[in-house]
Image (tube, rainbow over all chains, first blue to last red; front, side, top):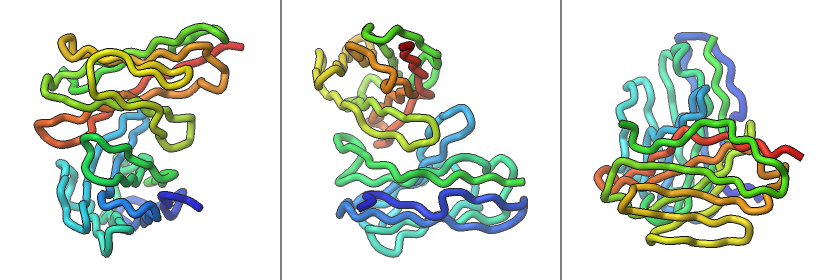
Length: 114
Length: 111
């Protein structure tokens, strides 16, 4: 069984469109994250939720809005997509906060904005 | 100064040799340190974590931490071609309670 799953795996869209990425974890973890990995492999935290509560909100454009309907799900909605949004987006989860706990990553969603 | 710095490589080592991957960090208050491996087109997976100064060994992998020098390293003994991947150093920054990743070092093990 997949521990952290994301859909879709690939997303190709035009500038200006709105798109969503979904993430689910079946590990029973209470903390979930969204990361963005750019073309240079730099992995940067965007958001983190603990038990549906937003605890990390990095300086990302307001066009990005995370939503956590329950602690097993964390979705990412992106409005008015721009070329610079092209990247791989990883969802991750952990039991407890970041300090001493392994984060398990999903397979990633490769977003290409044309 | 970047919060977590790694040499991007590529680091090329022959099969059977020891690969040494290095990472420095800026937050002196950091307490936990992680090494993730990422194969091309795949997601990062945890190899090791270390909290205390000194060495921690797990099979062919050894993590080394020197908090005074703000330095953490990963040694891979008897390197195999299957070890070829990007290795990401990640540091928990106590000030912001975030896990900050370095840009990764690409390791290439030559058969």
